[in-house]
Structures are given as C-alpha cells and as structure tokens.
Image (cartoon, rainbow, N blue to C red; front, side, top):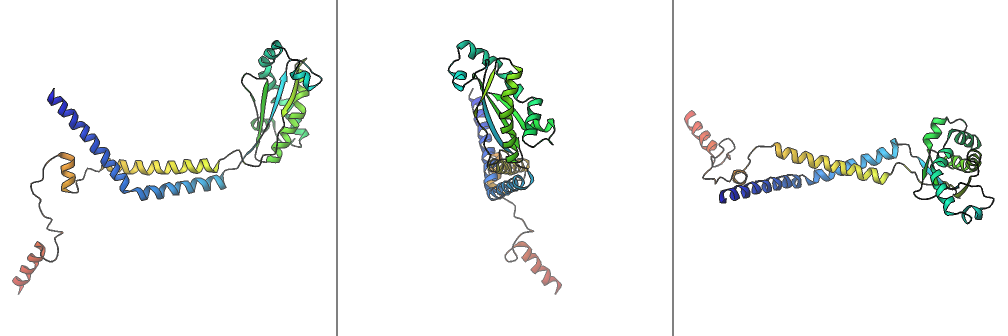
Length: 261
C-alpha cells in the first residue's frame, strides 16, 4: 500500500513538473504571443473592413388575427380566448404568406426593385413568429440600407391585403414599422477582431507548448535533476568552448608554438 501511494505521488509530481515546464516555455515567449495576437487582430479587422460587404437589417412586426376587424380596437379588445388560441395556431401560416412569392414580387415592384429575382428576395426576407403570441417579425437584410427600408415598407403595405384575401375572415395590423438602418447588421468589426486575437493567441501558445513537449534535449544540470531526479556528481568541461585565456585550448596552442620554435 505504501509503495502504491509513493508511486502515485511520484506520477503526480511528474505531471506538475511537466505543466510547469510548459508554463515556463509559454511565459518565456510571452512577447511573441502578444505580437502574434495583435497581428491576427489587425488582420481580422482589415479583412472585415475591406473584404467583407456589409449588410443592413430592418424589421417590421405584424399582429395577426383569425377574424376581420374594422378598427384597431376591434382587433385587440374584441378578442376572446378562443380567437386568440386559433390565431396563434394560424400564425405560422400568416408568416409563410407574408414571405411568399406573390407578396415579395408585388412588394419589390412597388419598391422599385423589380429587377431582383425571387431567389434574391427570398434570401433577403425572413419571417419569424414570436413564441406564444400573435406577432410575426419580418426582417429584410440587404447591402443597401435604403433598398432594405423600401422593400420592408412595401411588404407592410402589400401583406395585410394578401393575408385577408387568402385566409377569409382574418386581419393583419402592422405594430412596428421598419426604420432606416444606420449600422451594418453584419459583419461585426469588434467581434471579428476579438476572434482574430483569440485565434492568434491560441495558435502561438499551442506552438510553444508543442515545441516544448517535442524537445527532449537537456540543457543544464538543474534540468537533468528536475526531469530524472538524479543527483549530479560531476560534469565534464567542454574543451571546444573553453576560453582563450586559462582554458585547455589556450595551453595546448601555447605548447604547440613552443614546439614549432
């Protein structure tokens, strides 16, 4: 039992020494890690700034009901629990109608974007149903913020009539109208720069750690004792690197000069 405990302690000591050696290797190259981290951050920022086309997003929110209403108060105040439940069940149907081909193509013509294909329009427009509500959020994402706004406004104008025509006895009211986006929705310069810095730091730290693990050389007596736990009795001097004065090479060269005379 004592031997087993001793071996377990030795193994834990070896793991601690290895981790400490890795930490020292990374700490020794900390300035290189910092420089690579900054370099990757700068490259990510420049890539985001000049090579990625920004997109702009505007959103409208519609309230849908499973019965027609002549006024806004009738749409909300006159609802029963049965009406609300039925409307929630049909909300996904309304979302599909709002983003359907007839609605998008008619809205594109009204917005002066008739040159866009349906594939381009379907990629730019997406509808999402808010959980447990009768609200549908419709988003328009385009590279031109003004085009995104015009298309969203046209959809807000076209969609209610289309919904009423397809689903009899239903109604749709725009709750939140789209606004002109002033900032890009994608990409995020701050996020990409941070990701670039993290990537640079990770790669450099991994490189230093792997290099330390693959390096099996012993550079000093202290490192030999730390790795193998063997006490150093004595060392053999390096004759090739001895100094020019007082070294073995110096004495050898001096004796050679005397012999040549």
